[in-house]
Structures are given as structure tokens and as C-alpha cells.
Image (tube, rainbow, N blue to C red; front, side, top):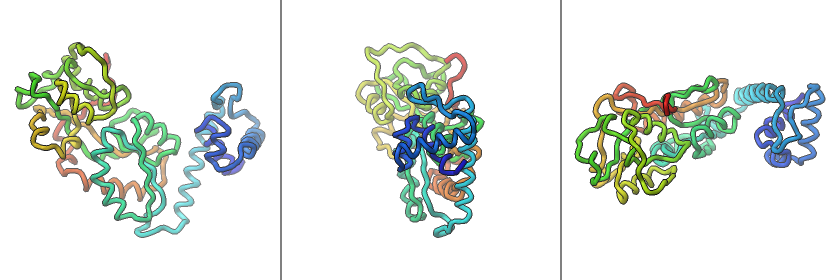
Length: 318
């Protein structure tokens, strides 16, 4: 068994196709196939079921792959310990995933300063949904993710960054526009614009208005993953939507006039940096990023006690 064979094994599990895995590893398909076969022979087991497409790991193969990922993490950690580092000990690459309801608002706040401070760091950022980020973090395809917590996952460690309020963005034609402050009981599903399935913000919005769900009464169904689209729908079609606080920071006077905050306890969401529970790699880089984010957001968002965290998972009965 060799480290190279374990890398090929992980690639094959990721792509579930010999040709794609070989391309990802920059080797020929016969080379990768031969090494996987040698690994299986040395272990005396079949690691993949080749009778199905895409191929999939056998039951014992899943356990071997899980352990192989742990071994490769330790190898990378050892390499980090002995390789020369750049300025302040921070260099190398960092792969981050971030959810769509954060990326357009958070990245411009901290990225310029981070990239300027750590010029020897190569940063790759992917905009993905929560489930996709978690999957890639667990497979070591991402070093960390920036998303909404808490999560119920035993292999994920979350480091809270900040807490942003939920605010209602209300058409001036909607009855809620007549209120200066809202309660969660004021909200109902009727007239509310939501993100499409897969976004944690959709789940949180439904959890906020769960006391008075109402019924959908529109003549059409529209699905989007973009908060700016929801805001424009409110402007043109009426109704209302819920926005996280960072999405409203740059609002002009006309847009700000449509904002309605909530009475206490105000609903808010917890934003965290997540890593694999066994991840020992790049802790200095991730700590530097955490510090830069915390320094970049409004100071008031660092206080978890100014509101009540809304679950980012479906509540019973949803």
C-alpha cells in the first residue's frame, strides 16, 4: 500500500469514473486502474462495485476510503510542519466554500484586506449550497466552508464568526408596511417571496413564520437562489421577503424605507466557519481568515445576545 495508491483511491471515490479520476490525478487511465487493482490485491478485497454505473464503493471499501482520507490528512499535516513557510508562517493554498446568501455581501468586506495581507496564499472560493459545502469539506475537496449554523453533523466543527438579524423587506402596498416593527406572528406564507429548495435561508424564513403559515395564493410559482431577485419582485410585484442584515448594509433611502425590523426577541442567524472535525491542516491560515472576517463585519454583529438564533433545519411538522 502506498500514498499514491491512496490518492488514486480517493480520486476514484470522488469521480466514480476511472477516466475522470485519472484526469484529475494527471495520469493515464491504465496507470490508475493498475494501481487500484494492486491496492485491492494487497488488501485482499474489492474496493469498488464495477457492475454499476457510476461505480460505487463496496461496504468494506467505504471504510477503507474513510480511513484513507484520515491518513492523507495526516500526511499533508506532516508536510506542512516541515516545508518552509512564507511571511508570518502563512503561505500555500486555501479552498473555501460559501453559501449564495453570504457571498455577494461578505466577500467584498474581507477579501481585499485578506489578499493584501497574505500575498503568498492562493485562495480559491466556490459558491455552493450548504449540503454541497459539507460534502466537499468531508471529502477534503474544500478546506473550510462559510455558512449558517448550528449544524447537526458529528464530523463537522463550527467556529462562529458573527450573528446577523433577519429583516423584512416589504412592499409599500403590503399591510405589513403600516407597522413600524413586526412580530413573528405578523408573518404568514401568503405574499412571502422565498428562495428555492436547498437554501438554508428558505428554511429559516419558514421557521420564522411557522406560527401563521397561511396558504400560497399566487398565480405562478417562481424559484430563485438570488436574494436580489426576491427584492426586485417585492418592488415590482408586491408582497415581502426576509433578508439577512448584511444584504441591507448598502441600501439607499428608498430601499431602506421598505425595511421592517422585529420586536424582541429579534430573529437572527449564526454564521460560522466550518472544518472537518479531524482537520489539522491550515489552522494558521483559517485562523487568519476568521480574524479578518470578524474585523470586517459591523461590530454589533459580533454579539450573539441581541436576538434569537433561528434554526437552519426544518422544525417538526414542516
